[in-house]
Length: 615
Image (cartoon, rainbow, N blue to C red; front, side, top):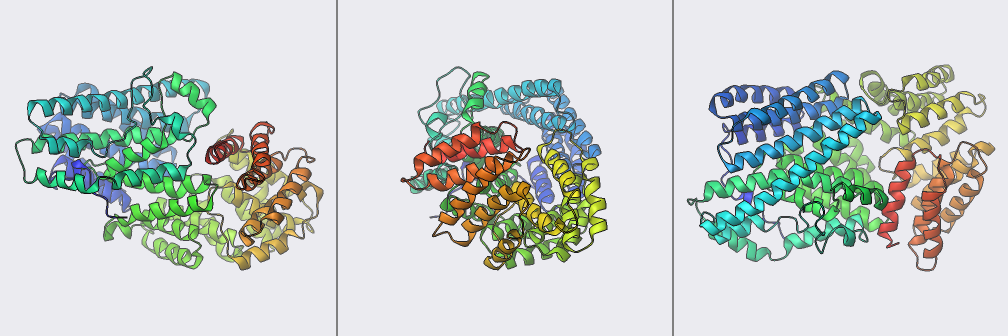
């Protein structure tokens, strides 16, 4: 595929380093280089100058500062950081109400920042308290943000049209501004959706929709490059051209994220969201984020990393076809390749690099990458803990207990979230290392380590910890080994392990004979059989059938037959001869297990699998 040309906003001269746009962009580079404090100092210094210059610059710097603190809060999960981030966004929202607009462009950009402030502050507020009142208020704030993105986008199109008619923008500049905009752009609530809207895309897989964006980007490429060449040197409309492209990039980031998230929701929920004025189309979301990624707006780097996150975290988890996984990995690599050498060495980028190596079955490369990234991130605790989390889980998957304990202990002691997960995993590690007393003491603490009472993972871990604590010493290692495989299945991490490890895990599973765990044993065996012999999946299917049979007879373990039904449904749906039974099993997984753990996650996977298979 030929190199993708940059959208129009990137054609304008880049912001000067000492300008507000340049400072905001520099700050985001520092954030993704794991240098939060220098980023905040840079913005604080710039804010003093901007306050005396104009309110628009002050507002942009305030929004960037809020994004920096917001990112810190999400990574650290510290209550104080979350509160600080909420206050920062409230201050940004206050500035939106008092700042004066020098131009219509300033007014449009202010609406985008206001929408950003509402949605980010709401999200952080829900992390603190997700009661009914908070959810209702949060839903209203999010709807307001969506309407702001919608109206700003539509007003931008009208403004470009007006500037074209007045002669301020040349036809080539207009073509450059509009060329890579999403074809399914936001439309007013109640208006009919575009021809290529969400309804059509529901029958397309994640991979197909994101791949089609790349195909569209390459179409008419020569024509687009010619248009850019005609723009040439700076003209009278160049300032207007660059400003409009920058604002389009900004609004594309906001509604791009909206479309991306909403597109993953099941149809039953989307129906109600459309009634409230929301839309969700994956292709539109990816197009919008790609436009922003190549724009001169300071969120361009944020858009790039959002796309990497989607391809490495979301698409890889929900893909049901091997080629979808491979295509998602290839696209993530291509997006990362667009970064310069300095950013490629940052801890966060190495985090994604190592995940991609694991998906690409390069375990040794991932281990080396984690080791290098940890050495470079010691000065930034939050990124360092994130890397220890990933590395610890990889060692845990490989049953390299002596290595896993170091990383998981680091997360348990210094991490601000997931204490119950790390305590549970460490308890299993100590069992496997023969330190039974230490293991039992830690496992007994797991229920008390829960932070969020109704969090699905924490509720699951509390129940499993109670069950594991009751196991007699003779059965403890076999059960702990099985539960180690189970927790790796239910957390979002790359599932691949090398063939030698698969063989060892199958040997461990053969020692589990307790009736309460037989269903889970067969579910895990089915997953390993799929990894071991892709050409002949009949043994995997047999294991899933046995998991459903055994799991249905065990009280309080509905998640086992539920996910076994899902896995078998996916397996059978790949063949025309068994597609009908596969559809039946997917429906069973989605409808029959009302009280199973991770029910929302299961429904999401069932919904996307049925979409992928055209069911």
